Image (cartoon, rainbow, N blue to C red; front, top):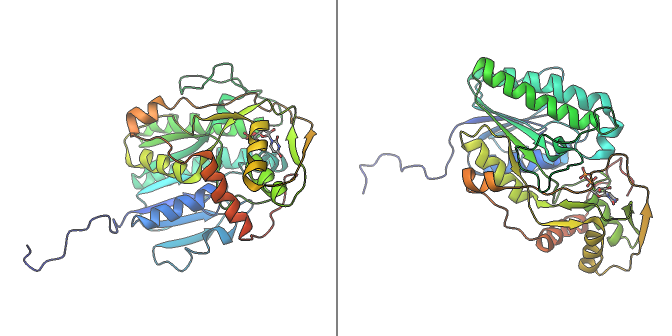
Length: 332
Ligand code: UDP
């Protein structure tokens, strides 16, 4: 076969350098891991406010990985080449962003401005982590990307919803005005290992409560719905967007919809727990239903989720069983 030259690289290092803001967070750390695994160099930038150094503990000695501890709302201190910027820094759990309203608005506005400027100065592709929360409490169901949403602009959740809506607007304006190559992903509820046990989101709350034999805290009557995507599926969709030329926005989520009460029952059954259900007040402006229309992702990215809920919950439960430091916040 060869003349003795180097073998062709198949899936080896590409030499690209990717900056991931929020890289020590739940989703960001899985993204960093996937990028390093496929041969990219990764710089995670995180202020460790809701992210955890532990999340990237397994990467910290890897020569292709660095962690820069910084608040991206104040600037992104990354020197050297940059081939892509993925802006994933933000509190994402409702108790976290409700406890940090001004920081959430700052990272969605100033943080996005800095991340876009970094991409622009290097001619790098920019990927914005947006959210199904831009649809608010949706009046169109399931939600296609063409739906403009139904958001309360002055309610407590607006610190997250409007920060992300502004981030989308800033991203599109920078794309139009400066020609920056951008992609916007609207992330629907995602779960998996590395959710903080105390982060307050429904899957971590229910699993931890069931495993400890405590009542599962169902907010409202539990009839509100969500569509839960396992983190490996979510990351695969986000990488497909990174690798494409699609601007989006594009929904990446699992269209399998279930009510919160159904989820509680599934968690009790899966863990074999004797936990009961405790009903608690529904948070203000909690969306009644949520389900992504993923026609665009299927057609343009060839992506769809493959991990069924039961399997994903099993893997997440195994992570909590293995033991992990308690987080703060939430009301599990
Ligand atoms: N929820 C619940 N019990 C909990 C945590 C959350 O019933 O212990 C509900 C919450 O009211 C919402 C859904 O589960 O309707 C999903 O909440 P989560 O905080 O995970 O994310 P959201 O989709 O609201 O951003």
